Length: 63
Image (cartoon, rainbow, N blue to C red; front, side, top):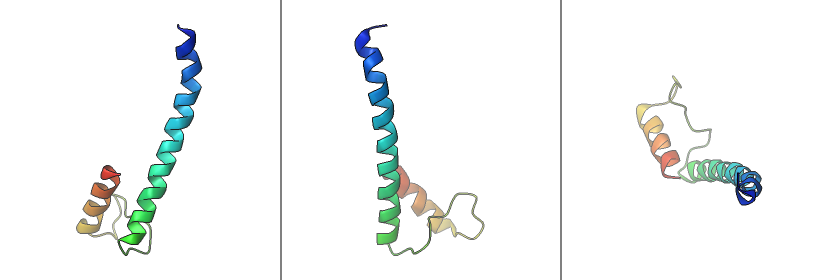
């Protein structure tokens, strides 16, 4: 393996994890801005409406 590829791997892992956390925070903030007080419903949530679940999934996919 090339030394450059070996040196890049830790940076890629750290940046990937940081990007995932940033996207999660952006989604939570966007969900609150849309006027929802609680956490976004999961697809298996029995209390959430179809509309909330679909909007949540679309928003999370877009972010």
